[in-house]
Image 1: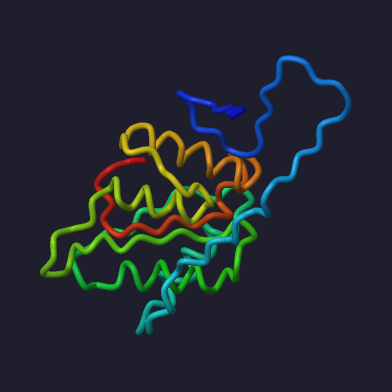
Image 2 (image 1 turned 60 degrees about the horizontal axis):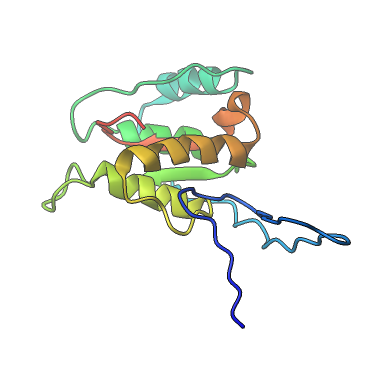
Length: 167
């Protein structure tokens, strides 16, 4: 006799119980949480950026930090400045997600769907949905679940140099 039970049509995050009738107790054994992602590359050297690093630190040290947009021509040090500021903050409890979008390489730039899938896997979702819209929605949901609440999202540093698609 073969008995099977499956959940279809939905992505399940965590344990799930499907039962018609239960006699006695239910014990769930859940896997340990995934490791906290620490994806920031090494800190890059900065020269004569004291004013910018101080201004960025002031924004990031707020209780409710404002979004920061670093702009400028290629190679001016936007990513180096962001990495410097994030490394200076230490390791936030929620981890860090990083994506090098390959804008300055001879290869084609990274596809937003590939970046989203990598970030979902880093957050413990082993089989990201193939649909980019569904994957982006799951990433937003997973970040909230992973970090604790939308107000704590600042603890996860999403550094994406020249990201053209809003997730």
